[in-house]
Length: 161
Image (cartoon, rainbow, N blue to C red):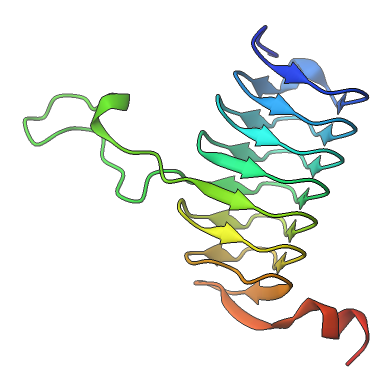
């Protein structure tokens, strides 16, 4: 379902539009959205991004231009999730605060990574498949593991050193 409040840029490609859930978000020019993706209200996806299938992008996430998001990536926006308040009443949006997450230009996030709320993934950074990102990733940083740890600088790897 693509809600009427979604803003789609020029030449956006949505694979299997009947198999996505997009509402209240903005998708930049030339971006591609895979099947079984949910993008929630307030999310901004930049130009020429690729959001692969089975990915969840929640409120509070901002993705800059040229970002690759692999299959099954999960963004989290609540650092301390609970279903109920101390009086056992069901929590509503008023009972918690969104932790904002930023993914900078040309970053790449591997399949099945989990990105906790409140972090920034730096420009050109590479997040390994299956990583759990719990803290900021530096520009051009390469991270992997649970929790994700910096393994090096992606610019050195691309040059073969």
